[in-house]
Image (cartoon, rainbow, N blue to C red):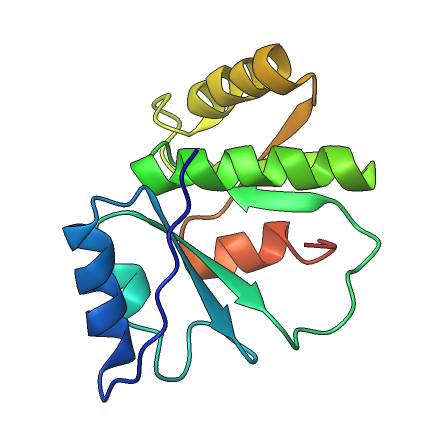
Length: 151
C-alpha cells in the first residue's frame, strides 16, 4: 500500500480534495473533521470524490457501548464501510450489525438475501459474524435500527 499526503489552503477544500484524489487515482481519501464531517467546508467531498472517503472525526464524543452498525445496500462504498466496520468490531470485540430495508409489499424484494451474502463474505474473510437486521426504508429506518449503536 502506498500513502500520499497533501496539505494546502483552499477556498473550496471539498472540490480541491476530490480533484486531487481523482488526479492521483486514489482508492481512499482521508479527511480530518473537527466535528460532524457532513457539515462544514468538507461536506461536499462525500458526493464529489470518485474514491472512498473516510473522515477522522477529532471531536465526536465517546464511543457508545452498543454494536458497530453498518447500513448496507451493496453499493461500492458500502463494501468499504462494511470492511471498516468489521475491523472496528473485531478490534473492540463488539457485535457487527448490518442493516437494510425490509420488504414493504411482501414480494421478496427486501435486503435479507443481500445482507445474508454480505454477512457470509465478512465471516469468510475476517471471522467476524455480521448480524443482519431489517427495518423501514429511508433515513428514519436507519436511525431506528441504529438507535443503540456504539458506532
